[in-house]
Image (cartoon, rainbow, N blue to C red; front, top):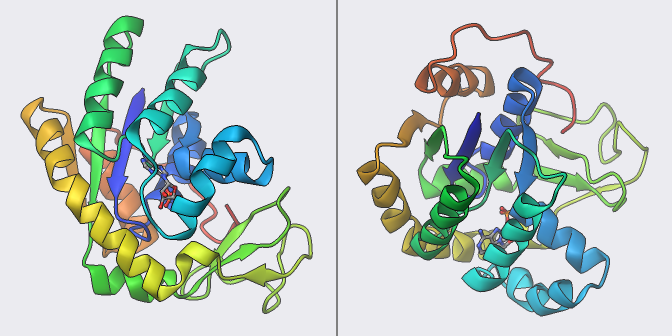
Length: 228
Ligand code: AMP
């Protein structure tokens, strides 16, 4: 199974991607995480994208397309995956379609998470991430709290608000998201791959809706408190 998740930052798609990995054994491919890793390792791509990401702006299509193509054309590429945060624009979707056709590995479905901007801002302001670059566990004070306030359950490091999770940056990211996503969703609606779920429900209910939209019936028990 090869899936794409489309949703605003804070729509919960990252959490759902993690659950899909556990439930369906898919490989997680998150372009935000790949780019943050490139920044942390000071690679040429990392140096190029850092100023854009710090401002909450999208990285140019060509850079992200290359990052994804490189990953999915390697000999050890994942056969079954869930893409989180890519494609984000219609141009990326077209480039990705070509990649899939070349590899003869079509997408199974594209799941879109519907949620209002105000709800996204409320959710993101309660998000915390581990400062340890080797850990990067994430928590949410609203529904996935760490055992000790401000301390990572996994490694004991401090928890902080990510720079691009600050409200002003989030609003800018949402504007960017809406500018590019309407056409993207329309693209996938036209080719019959789009599945829409209500992302204002609980984590458990959204997960059930995602599985139902994909025609997967039995949900295995999942520990929703576990850090991602
Ligand atoms: P995310 O973790 O998915 O919210 O992504 C964090 C940031 O990475 C975004 O605000 C963009 O700057 C950049 N980014 C991630 N994926 C893409 C993409 N597909 N296209 C353009 N920029 C991206």
